[in-house]
Length: 369
Image (cartoon, rainbow, N blue to C red; front, top):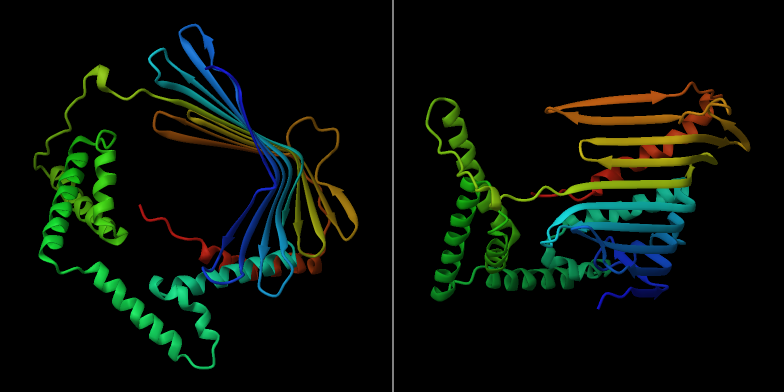
């Protein structure tokens, strides 16, 4: 059947805790979500599929313990349109994603919001300092005696180690085979420089190994061996080049593009400051990226200032990045601006941000590749 499909959700809510057993975290609420899949269209020898996702009334709140939830993000209307073009053989050729923010989109970084973000970051940092097997018993630390917390953590540690280091001969033999197979697959992927055909096998064996730190250790082991081989090849030793794939076995190049448009964006800052951004656009195509801001209006102390001449027809700020022949070119344009301020206002604006940002940035989890 080639019919349109409509899926509608009313008032969904997602809670993302910063600590596994506390009331500190983020809450994402949406008034409504509409997912629409349009019928497949035929354009000559190509097939085009379109999916439209619409969000209305999006709000992200930071919940700090014993405090009222503070809004961090508020979006009136958001639509995402994903267009995929396939060849007659069903292979994806082009994909376009268009994201449009209609109405007013607000970002809150005032004193109350920064205080809530800081408490969320501190709570997340405390949780990361505790071993994973101790996290379910975090609330026991609030008791007058720490004995219950210590006893629970010790027993959880013993259970974790017994499950992690099973000295049964059958298990040891199975685990050794899994490690050997994983190293052989990694070695094959490094030699051929292609993991597409072995991706499922890698995922299955990673499931047998179970522990991410072991998987990362085996990956680093193979990477170090091949990095040493490459260095030896640069000094004169022969390195076998990867086999050349036939033309019909090479991967097809998918042309991707991303378009983001925000009509009106309001940024709430400390010292009762509001920044209004109009016509914010971001476009990313193959080898090219463009970012522009149409107008910027600053409201501080009840006074509104337009940061450039109102009759200018060019964007207030634009940034263009292009890639060609292995080189990257960046071009930036900033219109002449007018800005009147005082040192006292600048200190009131910057001081809360400088206090909160180090803790928030430190809480961002590191990505291990």
